[in-house]
Structures are given as structure tokens and as C-alpha cells.
Length: 538
Image (cartoon, rainbow, N blue to C red; front, side, top):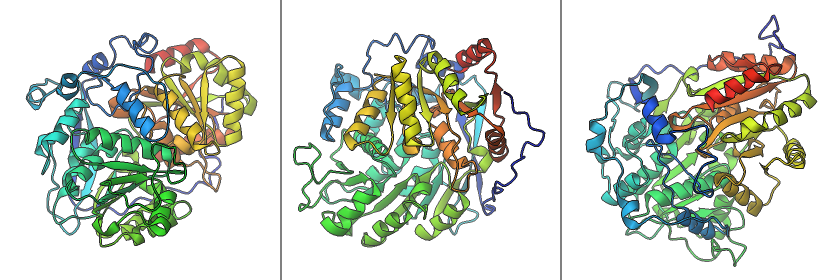
């Protein structure tokens, strides 16, 4: 059934997007130089067979790497997960020390690169507080960053970070500029926001001071674990320390990540979820907040949502002594959150994007017609062979829907995983680990992992259910975060929305209008066309 409604906005009750206050200050344009052919060769000389022919089935990739060369230390990942309380059996040989420390690309090489591909322009609006006519500082190489430590630089090159991404080149200098000022930073998913605040945090820390100096909070344990891992990798050759505070960390003494509820933490950086961080500060009092220099909120729009985690974030802020620098990072800032962010982080510098700039151009967006709710499942099972060409994330509205789809697909012999908030911490950690290591290629989830999770091989996102807000209107921010699990760091990605009635068709039209993009139809009545489209973009 094709819904070609005469009135594309027929349901007509969705609130119009209000624009943010105009930025009459310095408008800076940065350029993302991307050589598509070189990327493809570095990423995979034979995309159609690379996944199946991988020599290491346990290769787990946190791949924020512009070079797209995934030399991942599996043994280090295994040790890291043992540290946070998960004894997994990922196998793999550890690279030699010379391999780990030697940069694959040097600044001298970068300066001679001849980019032949088109230039993709990404426009940031930079607002410097109290300095309307002052140009924002920009760095084009990691060596240009103020106070860059040689050991951190060594880590970045060992991780194949060859040069700062756009958001890193803009945000890091602003964070480090004195006098230190709060920052609200917005950039598309998969552009390097985590590394931006991780690098800046490590450069602000005094490694000789054995007190917590940075607190970073996120909306989920999965994202907290990922951020802690990125920080540990960037600081691998330094004396900087970090720890993870998530559920059960103070309870199980047999847990390698166990923390005494009566002993002060001395780790320089603490990353965790707001509930446990708040409890640690308020009741256990094992963090000395008198030395806190940075308070970071990742996925800040979610963390400041007064209908969600806003109260906990405010209480944590109020329990921190002094006046730490506050960093708010997210891909989206809805208007009501944007206004509240200025009260939470007063007088900030700002890096923002227009609504039409939020959607990542590398993600090709489609919808598929389904006759009704039941037909959605039939279409999904018919797509399974395409879903496993790479890795796929399927998003559902409800936990029971995710469970039901997972059970039915497993009964058909399909290898899939499922994750949602009602699972135990151990179950959730195991699922994410196995998905990263490609023990299965299809992950079915609620919105639990719609934000921040970076798994480089995810090339397809399926919106089995349209994300809706409390009023029943399409939630554009959640949709953007969902599809942002693919198309990361310039890679091509594909997103699909299942349309099963006039309401969901109108919701798709609203998203087109909101982001000023075209969401094209994939005809489910012609599977040869479906196959052609999937093979073109995956």
C-alpha cells in the first residue's frame, strides 16, 4: 500500500519548529575535506565481502578514526571489560609496542595530501560571549592545540586520529582558552564530540594532584562505558586516571570495578550516569569536589530535559564546590532545552547548527510501505539477508515489541540480539560487547542506545516504529539520534522508516519538512529494486 496523501501535512497538529535566536555574531565556515575514493580504499577495498572475510571475528571497534584503518587491540578491550566487571572471552593478539606507538600518518604527510573529491561544507555558528567581532580560534592539527602533551599526541596517532575533526578543531581551543568559559557545543552525530571534550579534559588536568578534577555524566551506562574507554585510550601513555561510576559499582565486592563506599576516589576523571553520581556525592561522599575543574554533560539535551534527567543534573551541579567550567555537548538542542542550557551554563561560548544542517548528508533516508502493523514484521524478516550485509540497529517504541521481534526472528534461525532498560546491567553489557565484536549483526532496541553509541560497522538503521513525543507527534530529535548510529565519520549509511498507515506517512512528511531533506520510498512490491538500493548504499 502506498500512501500518497494529497495533503502531505494532513494530520496538521505538529508544532512548527521555532528557530533559535539569530546569531548576529561571527559566522565561521569550516570545511570537511573528504576524498571518497581514498576513504573507500582505506575502509574496505571490497565492501561486499569485507565483513564475512574478516580474519578476526572478535574485532571490536570504537572507530572514531579519520583514516578508517581499524587496528584494534582486542586484548586491551578484554582487559578493560574485565576491569568494569565483565569477563568476556574475546580473543586476539596484542600488537607489538612498536606497532602501538608508531603513528601511521604524520602532519608532514597530511600537508601533502592531494584531495580530488568534492569539498563538503559544514557550517558552524560560533558565538563568543562578550566578543561580537572577535574571531573564534581554530586549530588544524593536534600539535597546534594549546598545551598539547607529547604523550597524548602519541596516543592520538596510535589510535589513527590524523587531524582534528571540525567540531574538535573549534571546540577544543574554546575549552582551553583563558579565562575559562562555559561552552554549549552542537554537532552532528559521529563527528568526534566525545574526543573533543576528552582531549580538552586531559589537557586541563593536573596529573600530580590525586583528586577528581573532571565529572562527566551521560544518560546511559552504555554511553558512559564508551566514553570512559575513549578517555582511557587517549590517556594510555600518561599518568591520568579515570573511573566509571554506574549501577552496582559500590555493592558487589567481587566486581573488579568495585569501589568502597567509604574511600575517597582519587581518579582524575569520573564518568557515569546521573543517579549513581548524585548518590555518590550526596550520601556516600567519596568524591572531593573542591578540585573539580570541568563538569561535562554529554547528550546534554537529554540530560537537561526537565521532564527527564534535568533535576539530577541540577543537583549534581549544586553539590560541586566552586565554579567549574561547564561543557554541554549534543547533536540536538530543542528550543526549550536551549533556553534552559543558558541558565545551567551561564555566559557560554556557543557552537551551533541550523536545523537543516543537523541531518548528516552521508545518511541516505528512505521509507518502506507496509500494509499494517503485522506486515511490518513480514517486511523485516524479508530484509534479513540485507540487514546482515554489515551491521544493523532496529529501533522499536516498546520493550515488549523489541522482545517479541527478537523471539520470532530467533525462532526462524536468525542471529539477533536485543537490549532495553528492563534488562540487568550484566545482560546489557554483554549484549553491547557481543554486538561490537560482531557475534551477531542485528541489534533490536528501544531508544536506550539511540544516543552516542559508536559502532563503526553499523551501516543500516531501521525505525520499526516512528519515534513519537508525549503528544503523539514525531520526535525529530530522537529520530536524528537514531539514524546517527550510522553514517559516522563520513561513512555512507542507510536509514529506513516503516510506514503502515496515513499517520506514519504524514509523520515522514513532517520529518522531511523539519530537516529539509527528502525521504524516498523503497517499493516493497519489487524486491529486485529493494536489493539494488541496499547493495548501493551498504
